[in-house]
Length: 393
Image 1 (tube, rainbow, N blue to C red):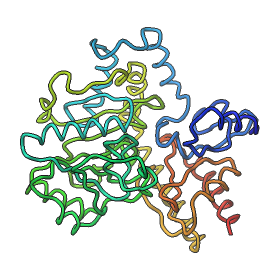
Image 2 (cartoon, helix red, strand yellow):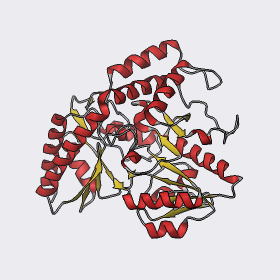
Image 3 (cartoon, rainbow, N blue to C red):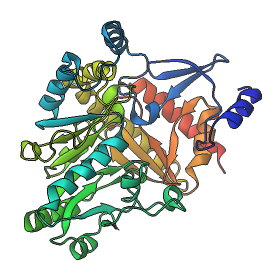
């Protein structure tokens, strides 16, 4: 990569991203190609966004068709592309009501507004979230997160937000009460290091929900849209959330998120109480329809197979490097390797071998490849991972 490009970027942008030293030319399938002609195996997938890989022909065709019709008209109009997408989404998800957004952060912000509006006449105001969670970058969701680096010297944050220990039943029992309006959680924490919810802890949430009558918000932004082999990660547990937030893989590469809710919450908002200019953009919805079609037509079954194979190969790495690799985490194609050193070092070594992954929660290597990853891709990744771990002393 050319140094002058790095210098220009540093003069133009707020320096909020730690970018990889790769100048991208194009991407296709599981591969990213730079302007020097190098090919990279992508196990990051745009941070769990490119569900069907890069430049999927079905997505390109759907986008091209919609672009030639119109790109944007606003949500003041009935749009067949939106309706087609939402009908598919409701059938796959089992939820009846949808609000379309641009991103996961917006979906979670909207969910906060929805539960607060629901709770106000019931005397309920407190939202409970959990340590290690990541729900976005805006003020409402930052109020539900405990990582200082995201929050330091940018407060104050919203009141009536409580952050307690993830997977701690005692902390849960001691915090939930009649004032609790909602509990928001990731069943698999992405930024939190691919930490998974404990089944007994989830059962405890169910018991408290029956006792105190609060709502459960499932943040499925990173772990949903088929990534565990089920449409939602919460389907691996005995729970039925009232509200679900989705984004990332939903648009197949374009900005698309949503709030899903059951019919009993359909009338919480009146007209004008919530809205968005760009949310539900028809071009993004056209792409999203292709993603949902592929998920319904066998892709989730493929994720189960590929996820099982990836897990077996990662267990091989765990056994080969017991002093460096401590644990294999995750389900399906959201996986993490807990290391006994800074995962950033391993990310750098993988990049030298033309493999893209990233670090989460300091010492966890996060793997969220496109859902179309093959066993051959996994074998290539494992070979590079082994070489990278050998290179780290």
